[in-house]
Image (cartoon, rainbow, N blue to C red; front, top):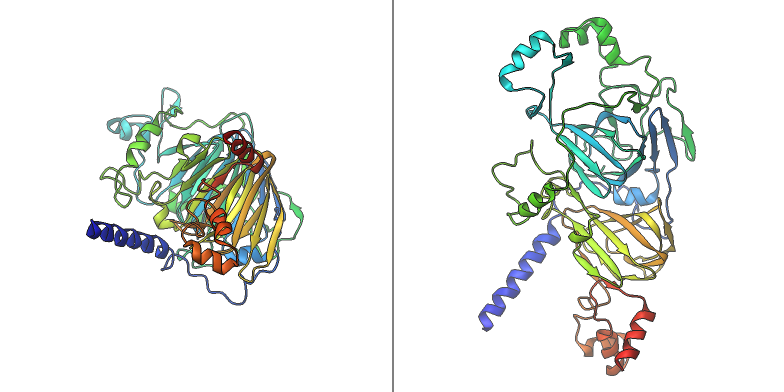
Amino acid sequence: MAKSTTTLFLLSCSIALVLLNGCMGQGRMREMQGNECQIDRLTALEPTNRIQAEGGLTEVWDTQDQQFQCSGVSVIRRTIEPNGLLLPSFTSGPELIYIEQGNGISGLMIPGCPETFESMSQESWREGMKRGMRGGRFQDQHQKIRHLRQGHIFAMPAGVAHWAYNTGNEPLVAVILIDTSNHANQLDKDYPKRFYLAGKPQQEHSRHQHRGGESQRGERGSGGNVFSGLGTKTIAQSFGVSEDIAEKLQAEQDERGNIVLVQEGLHVIKPPSSRSYDDEREQRRHRSPRSNGLEETICSARLSENIDEPSKADVYSPEAGRLTTLNSFNLPILSNLRLSAEKGVLYRNAIMAPHYNLNAHSIIYGVRGRGRIQIVNAQGNSVFDDELRQGQLVVVPQNFAVVKQAGEEGFEWIAFKTCENALFQTLAGRTSAIRAMPLEVISNIYQISREQAYRLKFSRSETTLFRPENQGRQRRDLAA
């Protein structure tokens, strides 16, 4: 019996060390030049720059803020209007994309992957190419189309071009984190570059972006795409088209911005939208996290998960709320991106236990409602004690203690974390650091009696999410 207990203990320690050190290697390579994380004061951040386009809006947070310098990330928010098409682009750092609102579709251009979505059989493809069109419509083949729904988290590898289109009747809103400190990004760490395949959009991040301003589409000399600097004749020869078409690719006269409107709707080859695919994804979860099956290659890899669905909660309390974690175990591609995410929902006045992140920075974005957040640094000083509202964000540096409490209307947030298997240690509750210590230790370090130490250690039976104190008191009174 003792031997089996020892074996289990060693196995648990080994697993914990593997998880803890998973992000300590070559995943993030930011070189701190000063005291980026020596933070004395944090504030709730809002976008400082707005870029208006024909079909939507891009809002940008200031990458020079100390919070982003510490965490090594940048954040933008896109609003795509109905029938709006986000031009295809890619960045040098991996992205995590959270769909805050709306529905749409997206396409990725993954190098070397076949065009598996087609409007005809392979046998008739050559004939269709010769005729150009069949039955009055052009035939087509392209790579996989993915559906976008509220609550989806999309993992986008560095350098993979992608586009998005709003198929719904309301704006499609996406919050995007770019990990500029990732080893995949060998360009500017402070001003992430976005490369467009079409149009003449201006850069979202630049050394000249003005704070608190709004940029209109079509600013002279404000941007371009990867074809803009190539010779027109070279483009025409490369594609086997006329120079008139080549000039269209260069988009010198295109003033629509990075989101354009499709007047008659976008017609692409895609399967019908359905939620039945979730059953298949649940089955995949039971496989090894490092081996997704022979059928899943980079071309067919699962890149998204709906983190909003209550049935997928990892922690749930009918009185306090729920917490859902997305990491490399339930979305394996995150092991390559070295990122993860957490969706939290707190009911009215409920609390998430005081805790700290062992191996990651946490970028918290308010999704709905409002909540009071308190953050404490290594010196024991409060660096943030304020309300976080919908549309605002705050960065919690690694190891800083943090506690969240919902307001009267509740509080929802999405947290992007800079490790594929981010861990946090609670400071109160059934699985907390305090609960792990002997009573004598607690009594001596806090200079309290054994009875007080007992109450401190065992008064909370919950693990992570705490119901409001008045509800807990009412229950104790009824039990008495």
